[in-house]
Length: 322
Ligand code: TXA
Ligand code: MG
Image (cartoon, rainbow, N blue to C red; front, side, top):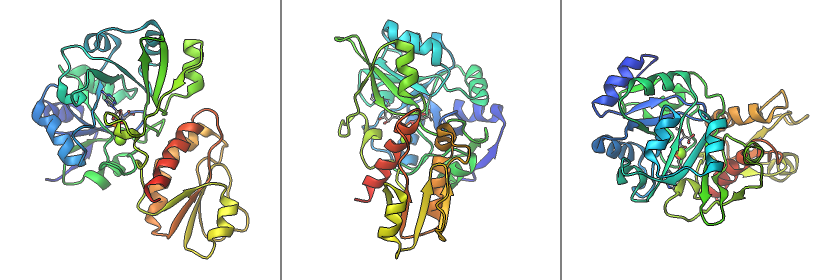
């Protein structure tokens, strides 16, 4: 199969209607989309990504009314998050309605649902008579794609079309938010593109981080996700350089190059912006991987804004090689 890249939403629409897969842009990362009402199309996602069958898929819908029809109820605090942050980089995990197939949720009675904030994809969704399921458009376990080119690197020859929406603005997957119906408390199941501060500001209370590394229903939370092929270590880069200086190393720093280090170096944001660092993270990890070094050394991000989500991805990439 030849994979084409373009901006033709009518082409994307026709392909999705016929049960083919299309890679779509979102503000977080590119998704590998299929018609959520088409079981063979859903099946193709698992085959193409080499994704374990027990790992459920996020349902992508075009508006807030759609969220309502695919879940059983929306607690008030979650409704506030929906009203203020959707479309946007946040996914809601809620009890599913009967309209959502077990194939989407891998048998769970909860569905993960979000409204992606990308003009091309919102336009596409508004022209479709069905929602889309879309995991990140990478082969399972590897770094997520934040450009059409990244999608081509992993999926060329495996899908017919990549809808090119440019670089993803946010660059990290959506934050997955759930709800504890007994304690009336908002839970964060995956750190991501919407910061903890933004969520707490909206619900006007502290939220609970509930990340289960071994839960069979959320393998995106497995410790060894988001891996580069090159082993990666996260810590203070200057001390790691002294420790591993005899190896062929690549260094990734957040805001500043290290003076005097002659080897290959990347900086995630020369503007000291943690959001910009998040946006560049996955593409820089890919570039660092391309150096075919012995080791990638990365500096830990500060603990505010998207910093914890960046560190989460880095630590999972590190864990893959332990
Ligand atoms: O930003 C994003 O969320 C991107 C874009 C394409 O929307 N999508 C994405 O999908 O990151 P994926 O499949 O790579 O990660 C979704 C995560 C997985 O860890 C999956 O296990 C979890 O969400 N998930 C999906 N549905 C679930 C459900 N019903 N119950 C529990 N976890 C679920
Ligand atoms: Mg993924």
